[in-house]
Length: 249
View: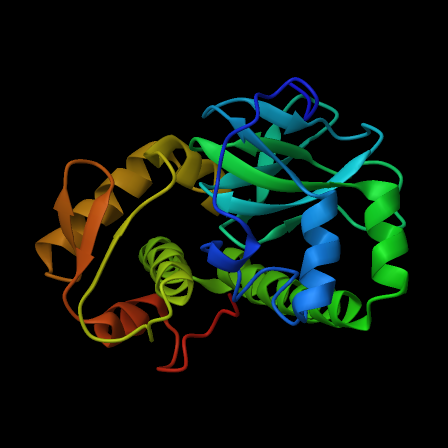
């Protein structure tokens, strides 16, 4: 499904937007926000639907308002690798880039705040706050990618699972204007199969390591995805990160 085929969804105006403090518009003044507001439109996608295929011409850019999406790449032999996750406030698309480099797939039900690409590029050219914020987000994404290289290349299976949970916990806390500390409660956006694909592990290994973290009191599980972390710093220790959190999110 393309962005044009998704159905519109009613959401709050910019001033009441749940991602306002973290999205590409975070530094905008009232008049700049009004200019963005005049351009935007909302689209919703169901879990499993594809927003973009790699190689598609990009006619829009967007911010994730709610839900989670994955960035995937298909190799020549048909194998698929998840190369990134998009959380609320993350930006989809790159001004100046004509085609999508990755498949973008809704992991959960997804709500996007979208802008036609050319009008957004024109607005960004005359609105420094948008360009500055987008640069900050791009650099954070670069730092996170470098940390992910460390995770995939050097960490044990247990550390990988703990690291992914720490990332989700930290992003959930940021979205709710909280510090990642103490007891934390969140929902995992990925199935265990998706976690295995993302982390380069087998499904059996993911299940075994989640069970071990639960048995050792690092996490508590209600169902498959509702997670309670009694002590965030202890989760970071299991992830092999320091108390600053390791990953940039």
